[in-house]
Length: 396
Ligand SMILES: *Cc1c(COP(=O)(O)O)cnc(C)c1O
Image (cartoon, rainbow, N blue to C red):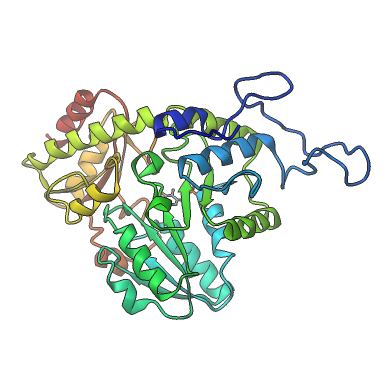
């Protein structure tokens, strides 16, 4: 059912784009596993023919995401209302890159998720002859100098990983549109989640999520999402999704929908606890510097306040000393798990230089300030005082 009234995000995560199942009245979407659908006469069917293109469980998830990100596209224009689910975040990203013609100029934020950087530089640059410009978009005005008539895609991540830089989405959209109204403006919204930030409301036309993180929320599903608010783009994404076939399966679609039900309350706790821990770390004698968009010391704190409803659960900190001190702390935590990834209910801690960002060159890491003393925390929803106790013991 398409609701004819406004809902707040905490209501949308439960009801957005959802409906009671027609034949049985099931409140939760059934997991439809059938790969094919019987036809009454050749070409005459109920709108479903083959699973890669049509799956009701995946549609339920896609409509949920379209609703949460405010696609504004109705079901008679696009069957999943502008939302698309893929087998991973990277598959979603790669499918979007397929909308860009060979030889195009692409602008991306310099502090990018490592896998996106690898996909652009090592796969699509050679295969699609893309011309890439990586720029620091914390200063949106730089976009005007770098954009050309050949620029077909601007890819922004905010907050970034791991430096938690913030890009002013509304300003970027304004500058880009002036240069070229047709440019694809895409935002990787993984770190914020739609509870904290909705780029389509700020002038962007595509949102991407690694649903493996906050959307799933339980560190047990790999998935990716694209949402667009432009019907022409929805049509092209649907065509690429079906043609490449990196779609999300029905079981994973169901798990993700289940996880999303608690997204709003989880994110509320992630926001609260991480800010409390960030303030505590700022005063700790063994910590050099703490980066969190909610801290007044964050260089783009004002932009974060303007465009985000909450600052997220991620903290980046620099420990005093060197690699040995960092390693010792990482070995001593007992509640925080030493692991890659983020956004789950459990707290995680990691060392980007050795772990998540080891695929980018040492020179680039140095340019981005990803030093041996940088430690990244994904604050979970455990009792915050237990988490502080764990960090306190590890830092002793
Ligand atoms: C994890 C992640 C991705 C990639 O998503 P997968 O689901 O692992 O393929 C992309 N962007 C960001 C910001 C991420 O954290």
